Image (tube, rainbow, N blue to C red; front, side, top):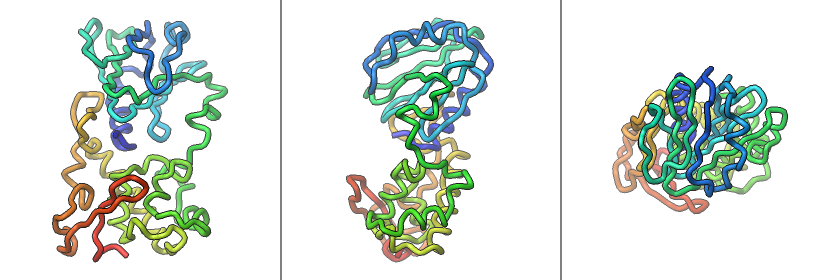
Length: 272
């Protein structure tokens, strides 16, 4: 599913085409997504200008003066910027039409994504946003913060950093890559990770995510960014999806195991 870098790539792809433009109408073809698209969404946003486009965790926030659209791509969703009157295809569930002749089209074959909205005064307390942890690039996300959070936690470190109430946006791919970079076994109990190791892990998470964003996000089967171009970070993956292949660092065989119902990839020589 699209992770933080893919969502950030989508934001950067769509922002120039929608920021400071006015929504003319919202056309909903399929309301039954993960949560039903609100019946009044067209009425609320028609005639409103997009004054800010931002990301919170894996949610895209299209902010108007009084209300904000909340979009999540789910497992298979994507957003495309297209000309007005472009023919729609199967799974093109929603169009946001703008006064510059552009359409922002939401496509989601599995329908696990969502398009909701919130009044700006209640946005931070919205059920989807209220309990999220810090962004990985914020100062609050530090080795000291992780160390303090884990003193009594026996949960595997990989599962811990994938918990969005602890830190947002560290999905399965990037958790595996960051732990390899930091030299930490994915199954190690979070409380047994030292402060020094957490320093390495925080820097690794930031580095891996930043590189992925620079590369346009990882190519996933169902993901394309706002320009219709796939990401290329998959060419730089060191462990994820490479079980049975040699580690680029030491030559040992990359292994895999299931943690928290997700497949984890690691090098038993480089990671302790």
